[in-house]
Amino acid sequence: MQLDSGPDEVASGVEGLHQLALQVLLVISLSVTGTAFTSSDLAAALSVTAYHVVALAKLRVYGEAAAELAKLGDLDDPQYLPNKGQGAGSLVPFALRWLQAELPGLAGQDQEGIQAQYRLLDWCRQQAATAKAAGDAAAAVQWLERQQRSACSLAGKHVRLRQHRAALAVLNEVLKQAPHQPVLWSQAGHVLLSLGDIPAAQRSFERAAAAAKHLGETPEPASSGYALEADRRSSLEGCRDRGLLLFAQQDFKGAIGEFNAALRQDPGDHVSANNLALCSMYAGSLSGGIQSLETSFMAAPERLMQEGVVLNLASMYDLGASGPSMEAKHRMATWVAATAPDDLDLACTKTALG
Image (cartoon, rainbow, N blue to C red):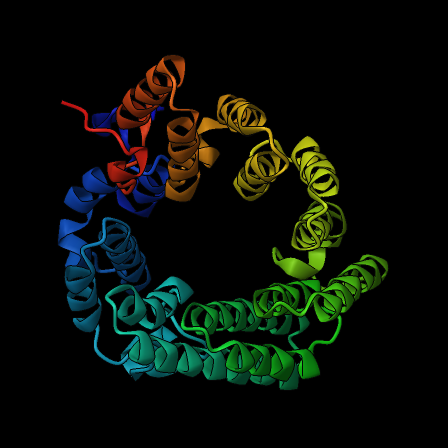
């Protein structure tokens, strides 16, 4: 990855850490955050700690990340309230609460991770209810979005453990409170596809499209989350959903059309780029799949630099099993090694680089 600025040119404090995070310079950020609690500004110190723990987690040093997080103690302790415990709200960045729920699962403690995510989901639900009762519409929307993200993450964990019914139960519970949130209907469709229930998945995707249309027609309080992305959701995410449904129905050419439509809207959509390549391969065009992924990498290399995408491209080169294909694979691996962010596992290139 090309540096926008050298390490010596990075701003100090939280602003500098944000700059490093955007450039995915995790190793450098760890050296910057080594003295997280030297700041007299508690809010800034907590933000620095959040960047520090994120960097450790991204580098897969989960034990150290958990240990750093544990130093904070109870995140609901009054010391983390404004004005020395007398103010409302919390100075703790939501990222720290999210990491507290994610780290057990990342460390291989699946059940503990699920329990932690349930606690986070309940906490977000309580915060949303409190904001709504106080008449703070913008805060209520923000906490509802966080509740939805937590529900989707929890559903994903259940699916990975083949607990599909539990995943659907989580999503259904949140949908009772927010029936017009497309991301929840879409996630439910994905779970139903995993179960092989294509008709039910189609109905769920149709509900997602209808919900996106509803949100597009309904003014919402200012927020950066799902509600204000209705137009994007109804186009880009709708293409993804239809593509997955057509793929499950073995209509590979139709799926290719949908994923191409998604990439026309967002050339850096690594999910659609990956799915397009797989659809091309299933449609009988290995060279088409390789070409589509190569094209996407050239269009948006930083966003396509995902382990799953690199691994699929390397595997497609292997399937080509020809001299030019192996040469292309080695060139790709060399380029990835030179430009990848710190947290990318180079084993995904399936190439031994000496």
